[in-house]
Image (cartoon, rainbow, N blue to C red; front, top):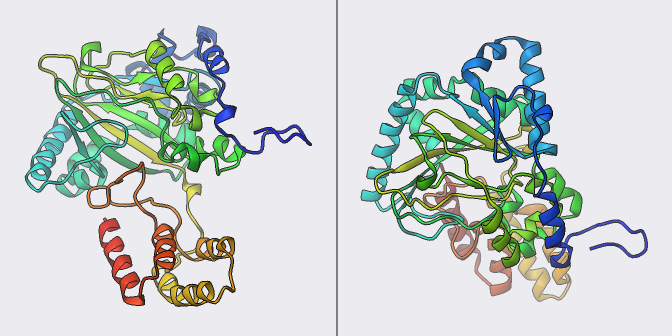
Length: 393
């Protein structure tokens, strides 16, 4: 949406999406001169041989030069890097796979581990919070798995120090269907209408707050469905609305690329890159990846606030003010926004899955609903307690 007075884009709307612009941006070619440390370029994806580069990670200056190159690719260029042989010893991968297989079996028996944001139900297994579950089941294996200088350098290249790792395992068995094209967390987990409520500069900033990664737990030839990627698509300004558009998704299906991976390889990409897990057309490959979603240290508030207690205390006042006609709907929303947690994350997606959307109901959504529907104090406290139980790790 261009402000007609000043000529700048304040907000994106559906009319901001320009498929021709999207096609031009994603028709670029990555030049070898832009990625001097890459061993090769495959379909616009720079491939880095970490067997050769790993010693450089022990040298501060050489490490920074490499990280600066990766950050440039992620932000200004193709938007994706592939680290070949990120794990020198793939027995570490096998040990983790055994842990994940056991978790999948346990969660199936307990009817947990269900739900995927962008794929139909079927032959896919999802382990939410595989980071904590792996650590608690096999602390030593966890240390060996994440004591990986290649993974750490990729995270620091995009987010700087003090980043926070989360992880989710996705296993797609033969016959498992592909995901639909999307962008990722944060705005990628919002609907188009919700994304349009954020100012244009927030669309730019959100991509700098997280890094998406995937560690290959098996060899992944093309028929097994490695991640579908559209290089340079993170450069598209209105993309957090565009990926919801049928024409943009259709173009993605015509233009995406896939790069085969080997066990122990890792791929990292800008969360604004259009991507989707591929369909597993193989006869016998259970394609397992550990999806790393790494967050900036700057994405958290300075103070710890007991919003549960605040919400319970504010509710009767909101009801009385609404019934007395002393607050408009906009004023009520403003008061709720200042009090209750307006964001659905972080949460425990095993027990608090997204139902009917991309994200679970937030505390603010619940409070707003309680005011509108005229709940009693006890009803609200019970609903808040149930929400807290669902969200607890």
